[in-house]
Length: 226
Image (cartoon, rainbow, N blue to C red):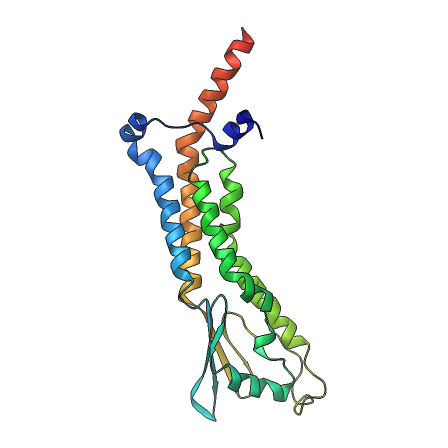
C-alpha cells in the first residue's frame, strides 16, 4: 500500500500547537473513544444477561447468569425442568458465540484504538461493528431461544402438554405455572453505553476533522486547476 493511499485513509494530522489551541474540538473524539474502550473491557467481567425462573416448588426462584463466555447459576436445575417439555440444554446454545466472545470484544477494543488515529470517514468502518454489537447480541439471543422453543423433542415426557413457544429474551414470560423474568446484565448495559458514546464521538469526530480534510483536498486541487 503506497504512502499516498495510507495518508488518504488516516487523514490530516493536527499539530501540537493547533491541538492545544482547540483542545476540546480535537480532544473530545479521542476521549470518548477511550471511555468506550474502557467500558468494553470492564464489561467482560460482568453478566450480559440474567434470567429468573419462578415456580411454586421454587420459593426462591431459579437464577441463571450469562457472561460472554460462560453460564453460571442454576443452569442444571433449569435444564432438568426444560427436559420434561423437550427443550435442549442451555449449554448447547450459542457455543460458538461463547467461544469467541472475549476475543471479539478484544478485537473491538483494538479497532477503537485504531479509530482514534484515523481522521477521515473511514473511522466509521471501525466503529460501526462496535456500535451495533448490543443489538446483535440481543438478536442472537432471541434467535437461539426461538430455535429451542419451537423445536421441542416430541418424545419428551410432557411433550403433549406443551406446544412449541418462543421464550422471552427480555422481559416477563413463561409457560404454564412457570414464569421467567429476563433482564440485560451490567455488561450489556455497559456495552450499550459505549455504543451511545461512540455515536456521539463520530459526531465530534466529523466536526473536528472534516474541515481539515476539505482544506487539504482543496489545496491539492488548486495547482491542477492552474
